[in-house]
Structures are given as C-alpha cells and as structure tokens.
Length: 65
Image 1 (spheres, rainbow, N blue to C red):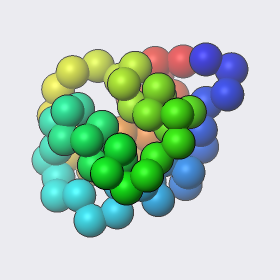
Image 2 (image 1 turned 90 degrees about the vertical axis):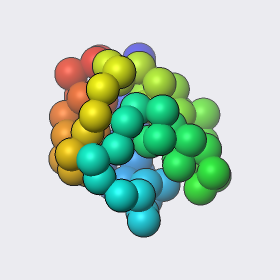
Image 3 (image 1 turned 45 degrees about the vertical axis):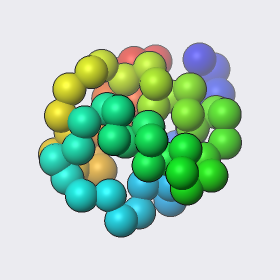
Image 4 (image 1 turned 180 degrees about the vertical axis):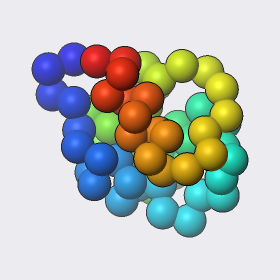
C-alpha cells in the first residue's frame, strides 16, 4: 500500500484501547472511533496476534508494507 498512514494518524483512532490487544480488538476499536479506510486497511494488513503497545501496532503496520 503506497498510502501507509503515519503512526500519529493510526494512534488517534486507538485512544483508550487497553493493551495487550488482539488485532481484532484493534481493528474494531479503530472502526468504532471513525477511522478512515486508509487506516482500517493498514490495520487489517497486520498479522494476527496480541499487541502490547501502540508502538507494536505501528511497527506491524510498517512491516506489513
């Protein structure tokens, strides 16, 4: 994906999420917070698993692209 959202864009939709969080929880939280399609696509591309911090989510997005 050429339009990878930056970590700040992603994290503004994940405020209040409790870590560790599963990929499903992260995507659901972002969707509930009104994340745009670009952010949702980036989150849906991360590997399944548990993420222990916002930085882990950002790293997974970077690695998926």
